Amino acid sequence: MKTTAEQFETDIKELAHDLVRAYGLTYTATGTTADDIAMYRWMDYRLRHISLEPRLVKKSSRFPVSNLPAEINDALSAIEARFANGEDVNPYLSKTTIRNDVSSSKKQRRTDGLWADWRIHHLHLTNIPIAPGERFSERSDWLLFVMVYDDAVAFIDVRSHNERDLWTQDDLLKEFIDSWPEQAEPYRVKGMRVVSGPKSSDDIKQLRNAGITTVVEHNGEHYFGPGGGVTSAVTSTAVTRACIDVLRNTHQLALWLDAPDNAIRLELNQLGIAHPEFVLAISASSGLAIAERGKPDLAWALPELNAQGRRTSFGTVQQTLLPAWAIPALIAHVAPSP
Image (cartoon, rainbow, N blue to C red; front, top):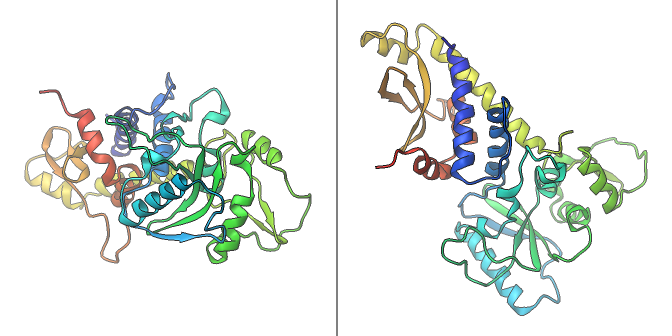
């Protein structure tokens, strides 16, 4: 019989696999590592997804961008309103949100390097209505580059899709640094000595495709990218950290449940279940839940915050792996057909 920690790790990996399928994400891994990689595949999509929250729109010194076609200015205003009102902007993101694949044999297809390195999203600017049943908007020759926060969004620049090496032009990051120096400060490398000259867009492209994270030099200072960079496998470092965080907190949750004085264990003892087998289950109302294998009707949705207002291990797993916006699609996918 598996320990609670082992069972929970299995449950987490199966849940990630279900989420990959529920959202129709490109995923080609097979064999014994398929479930392990599925969590990384899901997390790449989950972290790139922009939640539907009202955000304060802040604009860099590049705005207003001159010489934009009138229809692109209209589309830009529409996207600004969507962000401000908390409406869905995900259809305007790159299709690589679903097409990138951490298990791809081609390294450059494993994640969005611009986002992984510098945390910069790009959105297609178009006024063409999204067709019924379509997941994405029409693609556009004009792109809006943004950095997204929980309650704000930084509009960095609007560029033509036809620009050479658009995804590795470090002036996008430099514009962010100039416009919001206080937000860039945590990424400044203090006391770094210059050991080489500035890197070209082609240099950045080659290093990124080789899984090497580089610093950007600007005004005599050096900055790491806010995205955290890429791993040696050319996947997102932020994704790796999030997956580790989920597994670590899942283990902590299992240890808490295994304590003999645990409230849930004591409740089950009173019901005559002396040796419960805990599993992670899915609830349509609350998302993640703790259940007893032999009594699936017995389930507990634990508090996400403790008495001090800090996120619990359960809350961390829930928020990181299964945020509220992901629950309906997962439930629809795993629910048995009538």
